[in-house]
Image 1 (cartoon, one colour):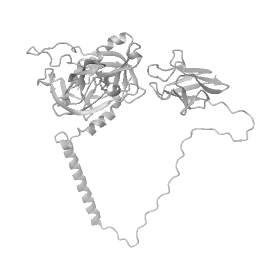
Image 2 (cartoon, one colour; image 1 turned 90 degrees about the vertical axis):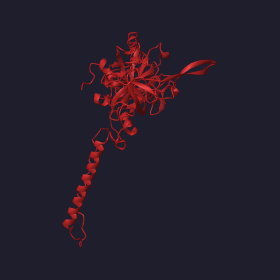
Image 3 (spheres, helix red, strand yellow; image 1 turned 180 degrees about the horizontal axis):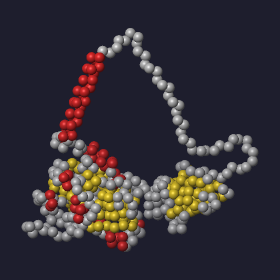
Length: 441
């Protein structure tokens, strides 16, 4: 029996191999295909897209699709394949590499030598000839010993001076602004390092959004298979999962990584009325204790660090932070391409750290983090991090105003961000209440 191996080069199952011992293999989105693609995500793939057939020892690709099959950028209908051929299912669609043993050459005399392609190690370059000693001018005098000692003294002075500056910089790094690392550049480096710790929360169901993936929030990896977000993101997910809705965290800056959500957790105090000693409810009703968790079926590519208590105690006006997330509400084009998401990164400062009544309080009560970074629907759940790569808070709400707009001949009230640029986040250690594995200090 001929053996053929198909390797997915792109898409959510990138690098997945499937081997077959048969003369015909079908590829498509239909349930009966030997290699099946997801009709929700792989829009360029037809139900019965392509058949690979073995004909007298040679493999042929036979297209039957709507969007076509491409080989080296050229659209094909029926094509004989060579080992290692890469097929693209629809322009810009998933790519498949086809590997098989080449058919044996016909026996008998040949007028040309037979060439066999065998991977070999790269040849080592010949050893370089030893360099000849540099010539010294015949009349050059030997260097006086005093010159050599002077150079050594200068070098030691330079080393001492540079070392002293470095020590001073380390000591004053958090005390003087010109020594501070908390810059946009430092925050951008954190965002780059932890780009794949963040994902967009997405639901898929035939009855939702015409069956298309529907993104609605942000989550970030707090553990290998645990993502942190807001309770207002997770609160409906348990019901969705029971009703057969697929929920994913699609990883930032990838085209091939989505993690299926298996369980969601809501903070027990979220949405509950709470009053202070004066009998007043929260100043921002409905957003207290707004942290949640999503458990997924695979390990996240990257995991963010949680700031220790000593760092959280520093949260106050002027503390420099950034966030990564997926703001979507009112953003052109919806703000995100869910099949290949790219998170927005913003930087700013914390403007205040208070209790839920906007009052000064002890550390044990200062769970509301005010900041000046723009946010809107979709950014909920984004991690607020410092220049050390530590998450200090979870973005959850903004100051929104209502604006009257004429839409299709009717006056409607639409949400718009307040020009004050004061928005809100929950201090990250609230996760301790709902996650037994929260880091211990």
